[in-house]
Length: 80
Image (cartoon, rainbow, N blue to C red):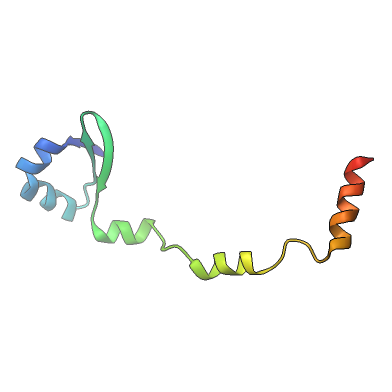
């Protein structure tokens, strides 16, 4: 990916967009600090999957231990 400063991006935006449509991606910098990525929507959809909130809900809906006895047992095991 090519780095490009914000001023250059602002002044050459139509050219940058044409290059992005051809497959080029850019790292946008502000005072030499990377702040964003400019890429085609096709490339974005191919590489980044949406976050699965349902999977996260399932992880937190099941208790980590089955009973208080199990927790006490684990505590006692750690004391040995």
